[in-house]
Image (cartoon, rainbow, N blue to C red; front, side, top):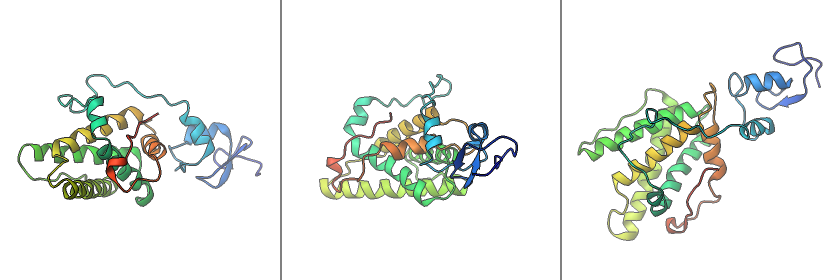
Length: 214
């Protein structure tokens, strides 16, 4: 182990940082974690820090699209759709380099706006200017469309409505706001989606269990 922290250059390093691939001190780890350091999901110190992050209670003013009520009974009735949508976001963490919670926030809002527009009878897709958020938007839209097509083929009718997708997106959007730790490179929401999806995904949507955050 090197004699000085790779970040501050003064304190003794006591842990290896997989994000920097260098030894750093605990103080710099706590300060720079998910700020200047792009921490991998499997960092033991990041995961220890996650244990101290609490689910933030949203004020009435912070709740997006409060006119749409998403009840637990709805989520139970639409378990497969919840899982497919969450799994698409988790897939984004593997496919989109640099994806963070703020990107997911932008993507979810653009998807919500797209489906609200569909509900008004118009066809207009809103996409973020942020290219990473736009790529996540497209990935989620693709997976949801594939799932809806598969369900329609099995049932013989459109079993998943635009309003169902909208409600699931708003549920995930509110969850992201609760889990977002406000760090510049924060991925607390993305980490939760990855960790609490049951692997592997069943081939038959009817056998999927609901995803629940911790």
